[in-house]
Amino acid sequence: MTGSSASETSRWRKSTFSNTHDCVEIGELPDGGIGIRNSRHPARPLADFTRDEIAAFLRGVKAGEFDDLM
Image (cartoon, rainbow, N blue to C red; front, side, top):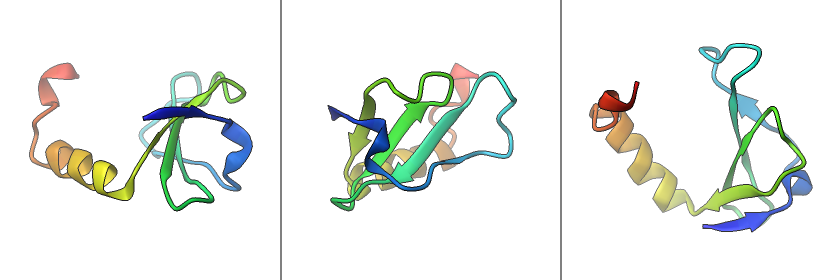
């Protein structure tokens, strides 16, 4: 994970479950990686991950491995 500029992706997406004040956005980066940022602070550095890292994380989410954090 490294810090990158939030402007490096052309389209940010957020979950329809997000509310208007607290939101995490995700977008594809030019190098094929995936960026994640806080929508309240879009100019701050973002976290970027490989597609394999995101796939592993999403598998864990779908399996309920992070349900205790909600």
